[in-house]
Length: 325
Image 1 (cartoon, rainbow, N blue to C red):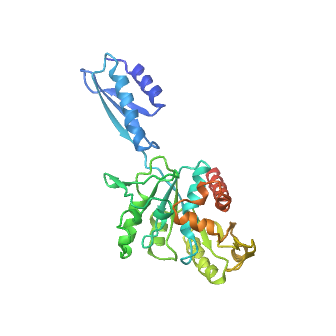
Image 2: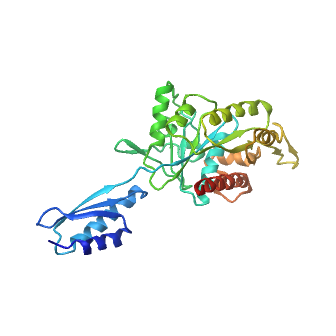
Image 3: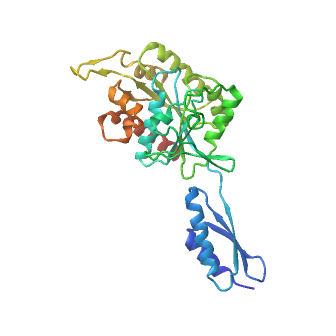
């Protein structure tokens, strides 16, 4: 009987311990081996398989090699970004949070779960780029900011109304989340405003690790933000914290700062509800221009990106603390 120990040792060294079950299937030299590709992106898997196959075939006792690749389904850490109402800058916050987390070294992807009003393709300069499919799963679309992304806005025709009932929207969300994310281990999910079908589907099928709530400082927005917080709390989804968006406007001409939506309301509300306050993002024309141009401020070195990096730092600390528990 051929001693397989040297072959097993060779396979282990070549793959960093990703092989198992090495055995000969017959006396003609047909070798079978299992290669674990968990955590490897799709482009990394084939080269590793070929490297392993070629090394084994170079041995005199081996005439053919059958490699069975396996991968455990990785549990993604989902950070939901929600709001009680629309128009509070939730999608802008989600895009910049993902970019800022990526710049901190987090292996992050981005899902636009705002099925009926997808705006992340514009914010991430991914309009007109459709995702490919491998088997039954979508492959996220890359971008210049290192954050792979999926959105119904990349699938539907530009300007097309997405008029789907709840079950169809739920199925769309399933496809976006259950995709081939490769090395990604953390998903930032931009939810629709409110507390409807998509939010319930997300909580039931893909329970988030935590939620970031976005609100403007005004009382009406905070009332709706409290409803969003209540939904997550009822479902035992931890609230990472509250972000106050559109907090203060600095006039580019005189430099004076005004507060058209009020100031400090979200921080006060966070204190009353006993949740963390993650920071303020100003009402700034630089943020608006960059966002409309598909350049998230968090991707550059301009001061407009600093508030998003401050929020991302607190979210990253929360995620690290969660892993340590």
